[in-house]
Length: 368
Image (cartoon, rainbow, N blue to C red; front, top):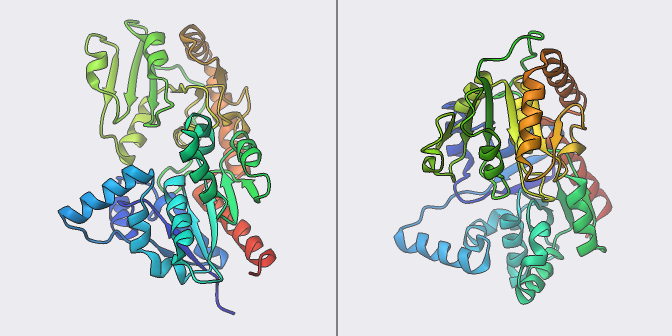
């Protein structure tokens, strides 16, 4: 029996050939985005979207249409032959699956269509703030998917409220244990002096203001922030905080080795912002402080991760010094978090397996 064919639609710029080269250079984790190649071990045949060559005019056209629609339809259209020849289409985010849905709506898919598994990260959280006419258009496209997935139950609730008649499921995300192998902490030990704090991320829901307010101008703390969207000028006059642009995977490994505590401050959301960095830090044996919003506690409960109130610089500061002053607590949190990561397989291999299991079930129960 032939293996089901899965087409993985990735954003433009995520071509797997160049991605593997970048992985070999230590720039990104896993040889395919999000480790989807592990699904080959689960009996699926994977194909991936290709970044088709484009000149100045082609690039401009694609970007203009992407800006107008809010997703990259041209990139999907260019990959339509492989898409339509597959049994199932996988997507990682809204900007991918909305483009596939529009391709189907416009008649680009013969019957029967490939099954569309639509993973959403931010859209359902943002829907209430989207203009009504455009929101209706998006919901129409969302209804074209055969299965909706998301990374936490908080967001799943919004999906089911919006699309009560569509199958939906939360699946747990994962970290590449090839690029971020688990490094058990050697035991309770004193932190650095000053206490080293690391924070990272590019999501718009990151709360850098609270991080800066919590620790600025305190000689007892040294802070590194890795964010491409944050200007180093914001901390120009703050001696103990550094903003780093352009950090790649190998840099992240070095930052985790440097730090005593990982801080993930985010604004209220249901997007599980920070889960990638949280998982990466946990593999390195670093205790984590995070804002108590967004479903992160579905992965690691209070006590395993220290959760603080949103926008509360004093609470964040207190949590950091509580951990900094308790060697046994930092060790206990780090080791217990690693235990949960292993037991629940929060790895990209586990993520691909969970995606594969849902896909096999979808094919088995949805023949047309």
